[in-house]
Image (cartoon, rainbow, N blue to C red):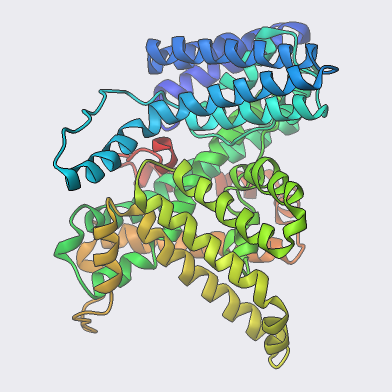
Length: 479
């Protein structure tokens, strides 16, 4: 079941009615059973696996808290359950990648190879593994007490709007909400519906019309050079942003319909003036999780090393962020590129600020944002490429056979829909610029007469209908 299917719309509607039919003390049961049904419709095997995973971390949290006064026992329990969580993720997601690299080494000695294991990656495992680890970390540090109600804890890990592709929710943010569910809130419901409409709009009107050329080039990258590669280079960041933020909007909106706020993943990333700032605005639930549970513990433990600890922490953190995306060396390089850029910014901040002071602030802002956009666009070559050789080909053939008479439009399935997508992205970006300046456009919009508001909704719905094409899966469903 996908967010863009009629089945999901029906499922969400039934869940909504059931949720507001029962009393407040029983609402979490509706969330639990809805999540179980949602996962069952994906795969019964995924359901069985995820239930076992819930049990593992539920009892892990209780054991940790039980031994809170016994430091040695608590350490053993914590590291046991941490290793178990990481081990399960590594086994299902990376074991064949590890085998491939071992086999490449064994080829040097012409010895027998390790055979790959036929595994199916459990849907959502990357997301609920990190959520579980964060939960255990907080209990181990004494920042949180374990959830004793196994059904409520199950809701935390299995909550259907975030099960497939996040966000990477925090237990201390989610669990208090599941224990304090209330009656219907008209503002929350209308806000949830607007988010869902916006998310579908981003995906179908913008992202889907940018997907075709991106997918076409990366599926046959060695057949292209010059203009088509440059064309894709500068639309792929817009594509992934509208695709992933569209998914996130639908997830947030679905949760909001049930009176639950989950963490947003984006805060106007195209307005970032540095790579460091970009990662505070992009995939926020993942980057902030890694900051809290990887980077900060590392630099605190090795603070005697000073700036060396900070740089090592940056590289470790972004290597993990890279490999979290998938079992491929391209993702490792993606992470290392981010670490290099942030380390550069760390050491050159004073000099860059001094240099920037020679120019008007609006010039430095625009230049900085263009540089960030360009760097992230280049980085995404490693995100989309199937292999390092494909990524190397893409980057080395960018400016080969540039033909100014061609525009890259030959890659398009429908030029009008593509131009329409770019237009609406510009509208979306303009709104983000205005919001960045402190103007509350949503508040102004909601104060407009109902006729104006509903006219805009109908325009969005008509554009979605006009772009009713065969829909690709959301990018981050693969991770």
